[in-house]
Every structure is written in C-alpha cells, then in structure tokens.
Amino acid sequence: MRHPQTPSDRARPRWVLLSVPLVFSSARETILGIFNYPGPDQDWDFFMVEDSADAIRRAARWRMDGVIGAFGRSDLARAAGAFRVPVVNLHGGNTFGGFAQVGTDNGAIGEAAARYLLDLGFERFAFVGLPGDDFSDTREAGFRAALSAAGHAVVSYDRRRAYPRVRRPPPHTPQLQANLCQFLAGLPRPAAVFCSDDLRAFEAAKSCRHLGIAVPDEIAVLGVNDDDIRCQGSAPPLSSVRLPNRKVGHEAARLLDRLMRGERPRERRILLPPEGVVARQSTDVLHCADPVVAAALRKIREEAAALRSVNEVARAAAVSRRALERRFRAALGRTVLQELMRRRIELAQERLRRTDWPMERVAEAAGFSSGVYFSHSFRRAVGRTPREYRRQFRWA
Image 1 (tube, one colour):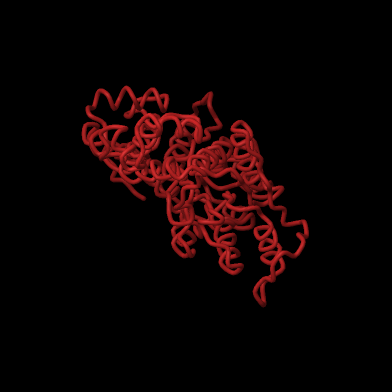
Image 2 (spheres, one colour; image 1 turned 90 degrees about the horizontal axis):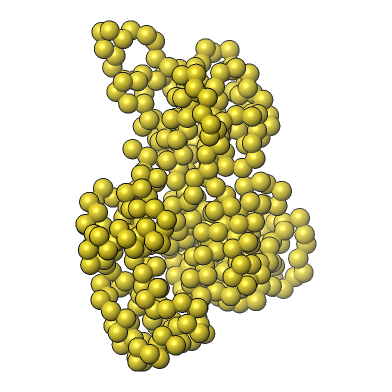
C-alpha cells in the first residue's frame, strides 16, 4: 500500500514485513486493519510472506524497518527475531521472543461465552477445545471461572481420552471424530457446548447431526472467530464469539509505528476484549423450566427495542406483572426490567460497532427514549460511554 509523497518528502517509505496465515478470514480482517493504519502523512510499503519459519528466515536478508506477524510458536518467533528490527506479535496467548504483542483477551472470550449461554437459560455446560494449546486453555479457564461464579460446573472434552461407546457413529468416521461423537452422546441434555474456535464448533455440530442429536434444542453449540465459511457452512449455522480483528491489526500497526520511531511504549502487551456473540441457529433456543419466564424472555429478545413497558412483556406471557416479576426473579435472579435493559444495551453495542449512526439514532434503534438516558444507562452497564465504546472497537 503506497501513499503519495510531497515534493519536500523524498525519504523512502517504511518497509514492513507481514507474516499472517491468510487461510483464516479473521487474519484477513486483521491485515485490513494494518493496511488502514498509515495515514496520508506516512508512507509504508508492505511485504507479505507465508506464515512458516523457513519463509520468514529467507526474508530476514531483506532490509525491513519493522515486522508484524502471528508468531505463536517459538520457531516462528526465533525466525522473526533474526530481522533485528521492531517486531509486533499478533498473538493473544503466551509471549514469545519478548516481542511487543497485540491480540484478543482469550480469558475474556470464555467469560463472554459463559454470559451468553447463561442468558439462554442453560444449566449444563461443556467445553470442546485443544488441551495443551494456550489459546484454548485460556478460553476454557475464562469460561469455567465465569460459570463457577454462577454456581455451574463444566465438563471438558479431552481428545487424548477414549470415551465409552454410547451410540454407533456413522461409517467411515475418523477416530477423533468418533471419539467426539461419544463425548457428545454421553452429555446430559439439554446442554450448551462452547468450543475453542469455529472449526471445533463445526465438528461438534456435525457430530450431533450424525448422532441425531437436535441442535440447538438438545445441545446448543457456540464457537469463536465468526468465520463465515465455518459458520454459514454448518447445519445449522453456527453462533460465534466475534473478535475485534480489524482493531487488533490497527493497534498492532500503531504500536509498530511507535517502536520504529524509537519510542519505548510503556504498554507493550495489548489484549482486546471480544466484540460479542453473533447469534445464529445453533444457539437459537431459550431453556427455562418456567414456561411463563421462557415466553417473557422470547418477547424481550425479539422485540426489546419496541417494548415500552414491563406490562407488555407480562401480557405476552399471559400473567400479571406482579406474577411475572416473582417468577422471573425465582428463575433468573434478576428483574424483567433488568433483562429488558440488558437486551437493549446489547442491541446498542452491535450498532455502535457496525454503523456510523449518530448517537440519537443508535439510542432510538435500541429502544431508548432519549440520547441522554441512553448515554447514562450505557455507561452504568458497560463502564464507558457509547463514544468510548465505539472508539475501542472501531479500527478507523
């Protein structure tokens, strides 16, 4: 990406090496965030190499000013260190090579997944990941801690363990897939399964389909990355925790810029929270033992922006407001109004992330009566103003 130079500025551009696995849609979004960073007063040339230690080592003879890459293994980090220029590692897990680091907070991903599945009314939970991989283990730890605080346990799948045969898997099923089938078949239901990434979620949903387990009615499946191929290619389509990929790229380029200028930023490890859950059919269910509360939750989820009072929710549930409040607290530990506000804040967050709408329009679309009330309610719920939230998750 080149930017025009003025006649008074004839210095060569900054040469920046990128090593990112393009096979993932999340990585492509991250690269777009990097490309977006240099403004008209800066001139950066990007050189891209494949994400392998050999390719990075071969490129080390090039004259670079900085490097950005996904160096989540020690061999990749050693190869990147051979450039002897500032390096920013696109990695949310363990630190490798002592590089500056920008990534997504994996613990916060697990916490977000737990909150989302708890709000759907589930009481049984499982985790499917890659034991021993730091990103998977940290996501599991965040998921487990959030559920433990709410009084729930988690059953984790271990691909290294042989599970007892509960149902016959389809013919020609690979051993790992067959083992996952047995784990899922043995879960008490209904249950919610959080997977460390969309590939694991895709495999879990496929296993359920082969076993005749209804998704999401018997087992709901949630992944991470919002990978369009995996999520839309699954049957049913997968819900997924969306990551701030473009923001990660933008912050990585900003940090590299400071390092190339000779600055010493005090914060050399930046971990960003996830954007939220993109809900699709694999979690499109509400599990609540109380049918009245389930009806109220469905009304709030589908029409939160249009509802004007708790009385409308009570009418949809065919009970009095007092009865609904009593049953709501007994089932969920919160009031109807608190749930309505939670859903409206969720709608506002989505529009703040994905649109350039002015605040008054965001407030109206989410069901708030005024911009002032929206700003006050949002700050109380999220811990920052709507504008601060938008700045945090926008990459341009």
